[in-house]
Length: 130
Image (tube, rainbow, N blue to C red; front, side):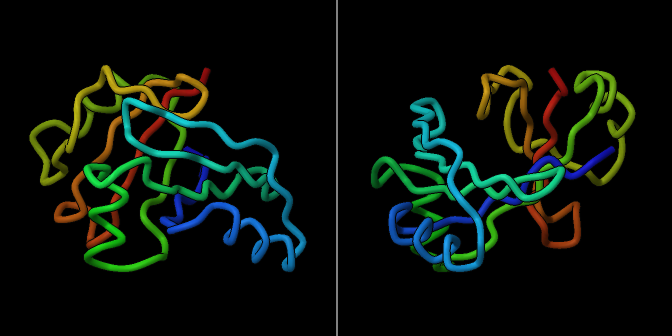
């Protein structure tokens, strides 16, 4: 399993991109994922990337995160070969799925989130490799 990306909740993608540019990063693209209520700026980082996450509205889960915790790391995402198989492997453990397997993330890939209560306080996203 490899680190796919680190999701960072931000209030303004434009401001955050400028900050990360000072560190040597550049935005590859910015897309909106309406189903998740988020705008995403993708910044390549070696074999992985940083995804800056800006809410699309007040009901966005990212807006709720910003309201309660402020800007910062929202989640870690790891690639798996077969998402359904991985979920079968962890069923019956303390790992709890936050959403359904049918959810789609950046690049229209299948994703699921694991609740932080089962992962030592870290929201984990699993994404199926294309």
